[in-house]
Image 1 (cartoon, rainbow over the protein chains, first blue to last red):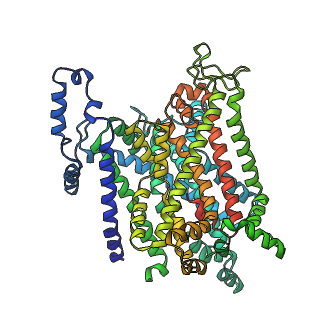
Image 2 (image 1 turned 45 degrees about the vertical axis):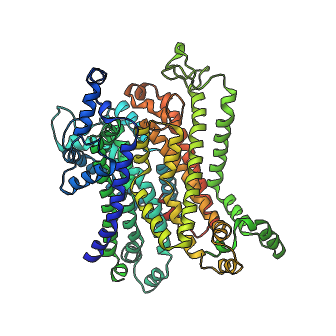
Image 3 (image 1 turned 90 degrees about the vertical axis):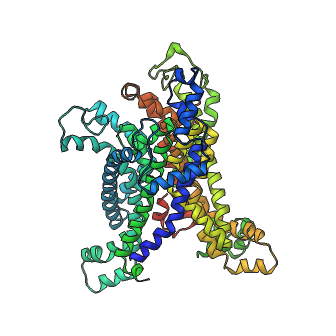
Length: 321
Length: 312
């Protein structure tokens, strides 16, 4: 097992370096000047403006050739130093650490919602194929895939926050209000449910198809024929095999989960990575952007690795080969 | 491998149908068409799409307003007989913008699907056919691209290079080719060992010729299913990016950037005619495209694992 993980890491390393290099150079090749963007136009246009910009550029190392800048950055990253934000001088690692928590909280809750709804509905729909429930599940899951997350968010805000005044419009906690688990729950309900629903759609479709395929296999018929009850066959024989591939597919969803989080965070003003990304793009905050891409790539690789390992643990056929 | 794949390249349509008529059974393409026709939801989806496409194409010609014409005398008016869906903050007619925006959104969707599928088809066929070094590098490239999500990458490109519609199409395409590439590669890996490819090689066909005339036709019909779903994905991506302000730049309308107005809480709460229609149009269009995709999947391969394809 350890060797499998190690081999995966060795293979992943060049890809990981490739991702950081492409994004590092790509971001810096774009037009626009990170110093001018956040500089007071009075200073930039003043008598010493150009000299000041050149000085700042030298301070930040932006006058070096791009490969040199990349190697410098990489060397610092290995030491655990992600650099300092151009916009406010804070350490990038600190900024990312602050933002990671809320995003992980949102993504984990959404994934839990998606799996809970997706697997339950998918299994029920498959066992009652062509029933009213199956019909509703099929249509709803297609709807969940087809409605844009931000539109669903807007409708939900319109109904639950603006019209019914049941839930807050956005944010993670009430500012100045009494802190507590209740307040946090009230704030996370809408964003997590909406993000979760858009992933429940594919999960329902996949689970239903996989269970349907499994329960028509011969070993299921054999289990029934030797006199086992329907429930026992369903839970002991059919479901473990039918749901196994889902483990691998959850890992593949990580990039989409991050993309979804960016959108949903924007609509609900959730103080996470998504909002950070958008402001960093606008301010051309190179160090924050490079740090962000690195974290994103780490997410994706960890997701894939975890699901692959879990698959190996759960499926003895793979473990042996 | 599915036998229909190897024996039913599209270019043999006519001859296959002729032969089949002699034997008395319909050809695979005709069979697929019949299966599609029996798929009620897909048929409804296709009809609704046709209506949407026609109204988006013809509608703006029949309306008296220009999509970007500012008329400050009627700004933020609720729906009325003169403006059936009201006007926005600049007094522009929402119906006109909705229809013209539909043109933009659907064109982007189709272009991105076409470009990314073609790119994926080419790279996948080459990687799967030659294997070895080209395959290795294509696969590593696929991993790199898959690690970015199209949305985040395009948001970046939009923010860094300034939003533009053509950039949006190019970048979205550059980030959506891996899926068709992986599909085509997998199919090519098995097709290249089939007898008819060996026959072509024995007849002296060059590698380029075998890829173009033997491999690509054989993977085309399953790929149409992917291309259809890709249109839906691209429409959704365009909407999301334009909503965030990184997609189609104003003043040109698109379904996504019309929804951008709803980021203001006053528009959201008191002017629903500005954001409900474009959102509903996106949902309807994407739903119908997905329905057609489902129908095509069942039609092209009746035994397909629909679950796998549900996963983007």
